[in-house]
Image 1: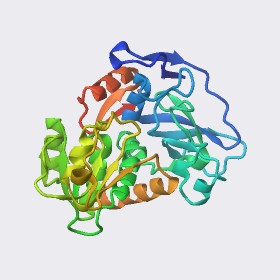
Image 2 (image 1 turned 180 degrees about the vertical axis):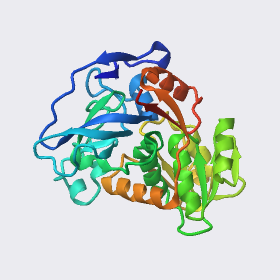
Image 3 (image 1 turned 60 degrees about the vertical axis):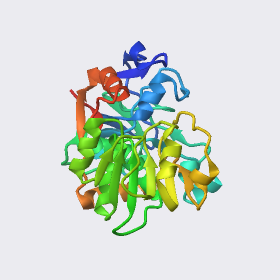
Image 4 (image 1 turned 90 degrees about the horizontal axis):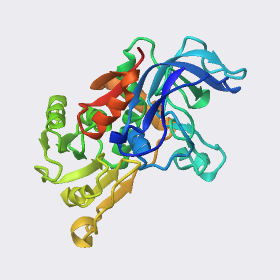
Length: 335
């Protein structure tokens, strides 16, 4: 099968992805062999390619927003059959036994493994997925529209919940950065009655935000038009942490959604944290997050805005993502 692997991490202009041809591995007892229909291109893939994330293995195939059809199963696999459509996401395995797993916080498992980081992912024609971490997907929808839900959507959903947005109508949410994850989280917040203010450097992203129903869309460093109850920082820019904290009303919460963030400037306690403002991080997701989000997405009619790339243009997709040329989510589609 054909795919793309991270050969030598470095700036995207150095083309750290290389084309590879590999044999399809035999599935383990509870694994699925999946022919990839589409795979979302996540900023985490860019961080891995550029070396912001330390590679866990050599020449890994990235990609963890996988939509495909099962073409073979391991001997003990029972959840899915050949022909079923499934999704593969970032969280790949947990130990199931540590205190975090037992408490329902498997996203914090010290022995967790990740698709496209600890094992080959979906920038390929075929992917191998553990069945207990795969999601059942409907057979009908366009695969390219489903792919971003598997990470951008799930992580955005967890970040939204971590931001402690007041339930019901009237909550005031700020979203900093407006790419794949943010434009999906915004739709959930809007469906739940929140007022959404988007703050991002991209003019195209601001236009998309207003089309989706945001009440305002301004530059990333601009103040929102009103104090915020909650905010989510999707942009991997540490300089925006004090900006977002300063925009919060008393008792507000800022959730930082990215796996990588540039350095955060020194915070002023009185201005940024006093009056019970909270600063929270977001780490991966649980499978319960994934199931709840996919059910929510179906219920509210959530729709991803995507830019499609054939598999052989994976390098271009990452380059466009790095340069903020992608409107919504970039997705690799089977040729």
